[in-house]
Image 1: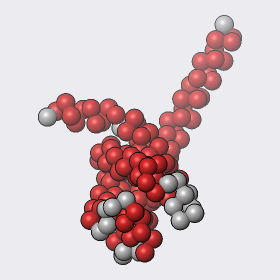
Image 2: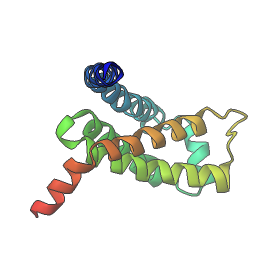
Image 3: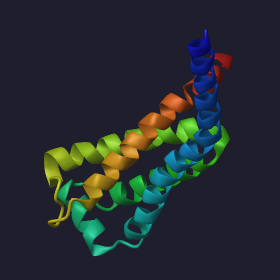
Length: 146
């Protein structure tokens, strides 16, 4: 009986710790993709030569560069607003699916000898996928209302 009480105590303690840490983890999962998406906008919107080269290689310059910049701006803003995080995560996941597709088929993992863009896309993809799972109930309830 003593072991049962200790096990119950440990479970309660673990739950208290998780519920106190959970909001921090969710904020990190929201901030990381938003920051990554926002920091790439400078290169897209200023027609930085590296960004122009990348979108030229995939055959989407200039409309693809500007269009993805606008969509990534929208995704990052939505991710940061708790009420719309799920929608932003869906848009971010779609955008990063496209980015990963082009990395794996046309431009390679090492663009200009550097894998950083690919790594950013993977990190953003993973964070958005986890956010979709975390906000699944919120997304489902909004879809059922309509």
